[in-house]
Image (tube, rainbow, N blue to C red; front, top):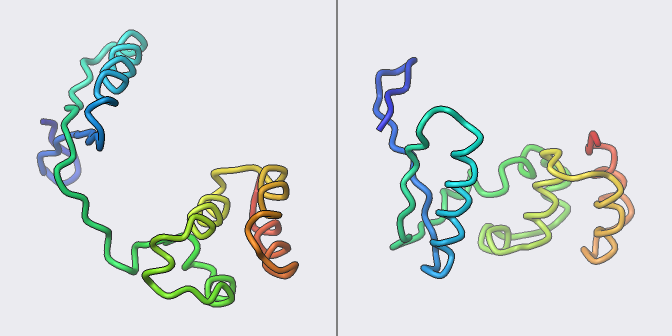
Amino acid sequence: MIQHPASHVNICQLFFIMMMSKKSLAEETKAEHQTKVRKQIQTKILPAERFYDAENYHQKYLLRNHPDLYESLNLTDEQLIKSHVAARINGYLGNYGRKADFEEESKKFGLNEDQIDYIMDNIRK
């Protein structure tokens, strides 16, 4: 447990795994990273017991910051949560991908030219 310097709140770093078969991979990755840093890694690896979706306004937050694009997708809140395309667009809008990758991948998304152009204009890489 560490204490956040600005707020005097204790923070416990946790990594939850959905499948126990992934636990050894998580532990190996942690051990490998430990060889690269001096400080002892305190992150605990635990099985996930329940998963709760975030509140709707947190879902695809970066996409929601582009209201015209978001509205043009015509997704309900439930569809937005489950949409692979919305997740990918959200990532690209957060600059977690390159324009060249989006250009190739967008062919499978069923987007119109205006939507594609808008997203391309908003990807920095």
